[in-house]
Amino acid sequence: MLLATLLCYIGFTALCLSMNRHYEDLTGRPFSAVRGQALRFSGWAALLVSLWIALVSQSLGQALVQWFAALMSSAVLLVFVMSYRPGLALSLAGIGVLLCPVAAFLQLLA
Amino acid sequence: MAWVHTWAGLTFGWLLFAIFLTGTLSYFKNEITQWAQPEITPHEVSSADGVNRAQQWLGENAPDAKRWFIRLPDERSPELGVSWSPAKGGFEEQPLDSLTGTAVKARESMGGEFFYRFHFQLQMPYPWGRWLASLAAMVMFVALISGIITHKKIFKEFFTFRPRKGQRTWLDGHNAVAVLVLPFHLMITYSSLVIFMTMIMPLSILTTYGKNTQGFFDDLFPAFKTAPASPDRAPLASIAPMLDVAADKWPGSRVGLITVNNPGSANASVTLTRHGADHIPHEPGTALVFDGVSGELKNESNMGAASLMLAGGLYGLHMGHFAAPLLRWLYFLAGIGGTAMIGTGLVIWLGKRRLKHAKAGVLPFELRLVEMLNVASMSGLMLAVVSFFWANRLLPVSFTGRSDWEVRAFFCVWGVALLHAFARVFFRDGRSAWREQLTVAASLYCLLPVLDMATAGGYLLASLKQGNLTLAALDLTALATGVFLAWGAFRFRGQGKTVIASKLAPAVQEAR
Image 1 (cartoon, rainbow over the protein chains, first blue to last red):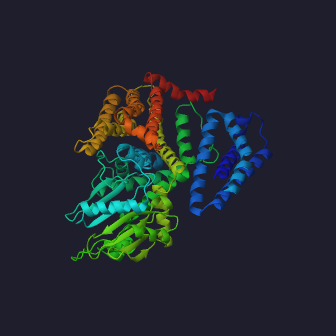
Image 2 (spheres, one colour):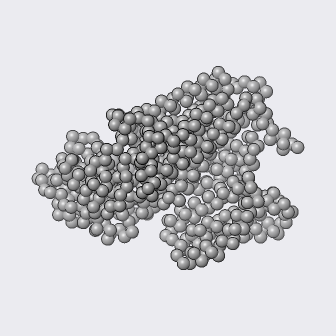
Image 3 (cartoon, rainbow over the protein chains, first blue to last red):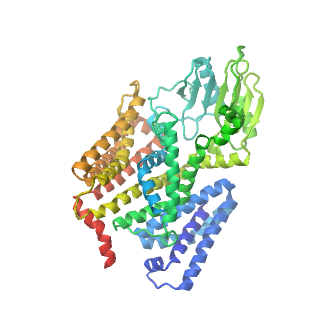
């Protein structure tokens, strides 16, 4: 579930950055519509891939329960962290991206 | 739609806060019971040994009972639980030590069972508490749906939380805990209605079964249909081999409740059900029935029908018996999220209306009444909960009726908190009511670990040496709760005037 959880957090961060206001607040750079589109697409893609990974790794019931748990907790974590430590929210997503290959490897081993 | 949300939320908010908070605690029902009865210690015991000991104890101590129930120890409950229905009626239970098979002289306490029962029975006579709780669940469902409709910018403000902005922050917080954890809120509310569906929507049963509603349950759970005891006596077969049969029938799943009907009689039978922790759906009807004398498998029933799977699935999701520690903590946190959603909603209702009276500085009667109920239902309940734990450690261990006194402590403190809230809100101001109750609650929660060490430190140390973290985890959770409440009390420091100003401040800041 580690990989699916990381992808949920990354997906939500991308979706958050796809919004003009949050993008400028978090990065301090001007927003462009094209970048917003790309972030929105990759955000939804990350969430869908995360669901797919959860589904292939265990039984349907457990997969859905754990995926919803990952989805909700990563959204809560992101909103909480970005309200008090905006920089940390992005760093966590960056660390998440770096950890994805490791998590994927662990999942293949399991 | 907004008015539905506002008024449904206000009228049932206080009750729903209590239902959600006690429900949240119930996710750790067994752990709370462990803390409340630290005399019962866990041991590594095979299920065959455990069931043999239980069978022997019941054979010696309750040979004439109509029914025996045996629950084997598991990772969340250390005791070998036996209970029985005596021939003269009623119900008795006794925790046994799983290693020696003798009765444990544990202090009398309902433990987590108290919060669990309160969550859906509200300490009212059967069935009124269940009806009121179901009505509250229905209102909660209405409040959720109307809240979603009222919240127009659900996607645009999905990630929005603006701290330190007074009323704005409360509204953002209310929306955030509602929207971010919405799947949980919808699941928990809808499933609570499913759990009581045979009670709140009985028409389909009544039209088919008429007055014989027991017939419906007999058809639904054939394994639990029992005949009266036959007058002929016969020794009960050993239960342990039946567990091996169950292991073959249910791979990867342990046996949960073991029921022995008419023990010692020639028509005795033994019913095994699956352990709730090993699968998500709640399947009370999935059972194996054995002949109690020959020990042979007589009957097998399951709940494979799609409708039963759906209802059982929602039931199981609500109870969360299947949740391993991490998921159980997430359930607990999501429950706190639901409780916070209700609490912030109540605060917002009052905050909005308070602004109109900011200049006069005097609140009208009805707003004071709401504030009093807010204080008593939130900080008062937190005080009542911690009093239950304090009573558990302070009442003498061998004092008769101590279990009832723990419950009395809970309600007496809640009542005193209501009186205090009344006195403060009507004769001084609401802030002092919040501040004083939160300060007392914070101290009681922070000092609970100290009290535990002083009165039951030996059990705590022994459990840590065994590598069992349950008792310590409860103490640490109490400490964390205390720190949070202290922060809350700190926010209410000073006089009322400055706050009304700070609540107006966001408008000023936004204008700048």
